[in-house]
Every structure is written in C-alpha cells, then in structure tokens.
Picture 1 (tube, helix red, strand yellow):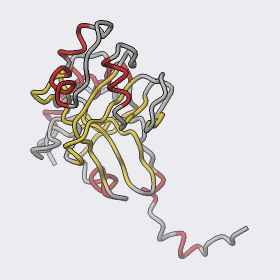
Picture 2 (cartoon, one colour; picture 1 turned 30 degrees about the vertical axis):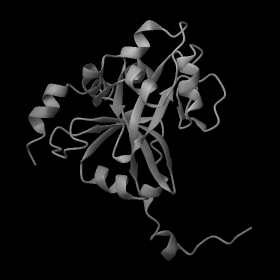
Picture 3 (cartoon, helix red, strand yellow; picture 1 turned 90 degrees about the vertical axis):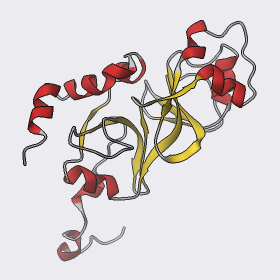
Length: 204
C-alpha cells in the first residue's frame, strides 16, 4: 500500500480534478461570444484525467443523413425509417471535423463504442452508420461531424470563469426535442428561467 501524501502536498492537488461531468450538459452562458461555442449545448461523453470529450447537440450543419450516406458510399435499404434521411448532421465541435461521430441509444455491437449510460452510447466506427443504412441501427441517435475536446483542467477553468453552466443530462433533450428547443430545455433542467438568465448575464 502506498503511503499517504503529506498534507502539504495534498493541499496542492486541485479539487477540480475530482469533477466528473460525463453524462452532463454544458450550456454556454448567454454572454459567451465565442463563434464556435456561443449558444451551444454540449453533451459530455467522457471526462477523465486525459481531458474531456463532448458533442455539440444544437448546432446543425447544412448536411443531412442522405448526403452523409452518399459521401461514405453507403446504400440505403428499403427498411430504413423514412425520416432518417432528412435528419441534419450536427456540428459536434472543432476537433476531427472531417469525421463522423454518433450518439445513440444502446443496442447493437459496434467496433468502437463507449457506453456512457444505460440511455446513451457514443460510437466512432462506421459500422453504426452501416446498421442505420440497413434499417437495423439504433432507434434514437444524433450524428455529428467533429467533437469538442478539452485538455486536462481546461474545462474546469472555463467553468470557473462562468463560461458554462452544467447540469445532469436528459436523453429526451438529446434525442427527442427539436434542435431549436434544446438550449432552453437544458437551462430549464437547472430550474432557471432562460429569460432571467439572459437579463442577468450582462451584470458583473
């Protein structure tokens, strides 16, 4: 058994390292003017000592699923649910913005997949999209191009500067709500009136 660190060293350990925001929403404060993250809600998939990985869930691109299927040469079968082809692809974040990532309800076995909760999985391999095209994919999903990433301690610092609100995620907001309603719905999970938040955001 390793000995406990002296108290003087223990005091140097940042408390923020114990924060784990997996399965939380990051909600950009109304005062955030960042061209990438302003007005966004980010679903956090993973938070550990290597950093944070998340996906923006309310910033659609002009690409739809049928365009994506065409670009990656996937043939759509007749068993694909009709509304899937018109679903917009999200701008998930600025990291690896030439690759696709899928948040989805669990089920199916995919070669590169992370189970976040009983309601949400995160898959980076193309086999999940192959399953969708074949009509056997997950019932609920959000497909993004790129993801959002923070190095260790970076997000905690941004939260400390009041750049973000955080709240436990709700899969219904993630998968079921119209895109334009997700920001307000995420704020309401905190029990806050979004209009009040916008009014107070400009005051120090």
